[in-house]
Amino acid sequence: MEKTMGLARKYQICVSETPYYHIVSRCVRRAFLCGNDHASGRTFEHRRQWVVERMKFLAKLFSIDICAYAVMSNHFHIVLKINNNADWSDKRVLMTWAGLFDLPGPCESYIRGEHLSKPQLDFVIQKADIYRKRLRSISWFMKCLNEYIARRANIEDGCTGHFWESRFKSQALLDERALLTCMAYVDLNPIRAAMCKTPEQSDYTSIQERIKDQNTRLISFGNVENGLPFSLSGYLDLVDYSGRAVLETKRGYIPENLPPILDRLNLEPGTWLEELKGFKSVGFSAVGTVDQLKQFCKKVGKKFAAAHRLKPVLE
Image (cartoon, rainbow, N blue to C red):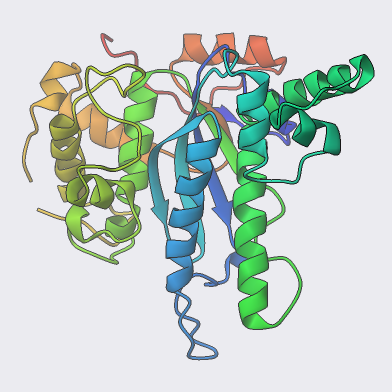
């Protein structure tokens, strides 16, 4: 992993190196603004569903897929994949952006097929280029997610002010192993917090959604175009196996079995558990092997400082 040192967001995300990113956003002061408020006796559990519904709505508009998520009482995790939208027509871009924000007059006229002057058409093309970039931007995705939830919660509470910490945290996942480790870490969050016993009981998580909903809009597993590079059944076995391990740093766990996916990915059980145990959700801007981290740091223009790394698969 690569330690984050206040690096600007645009330098933490480098799509040429990896399309996969782990995002963490926390409630202000880490208060339980999406859970049970012991001070007032009120419950805000329903807001966790708000987050799930909003992120899935945004995933339909943005050129971004959701790989995994877990919405907790005072924070949430999302693993995202950034897709290429260079082939989106200007009209598609403008119509998509109109699902989020009002369009300038010339852009609306362009969508309706009305005649535009040369300066107006140049303006429309320029705006479409801007919106196209935004529609594959994690920063814009998170802006549209967090601002919506904050406004809705403040209206419900009859108050104003910050709901989320000012910045979300971002980690680049530099290979399949880092992606798999992070997804399992995210899906096991409720179990490790002793909120439930099994993945199928893990409310507001991607793993529960995948188990219960065969028509889920999450990115697909297996041999499909742009899908995740492993099978759903193998991933479920791996998460179940990992969740059975008792970790001294976590309260929750479930009971022990060796899943076949470990052999398929050449992952030694003890090494896998050490990596999952050592996985940090904050404080590191990238996850991968030493060579991958050095390459990533070179691309984003920062110094390499290896605090924790994933071992190469064949090491």
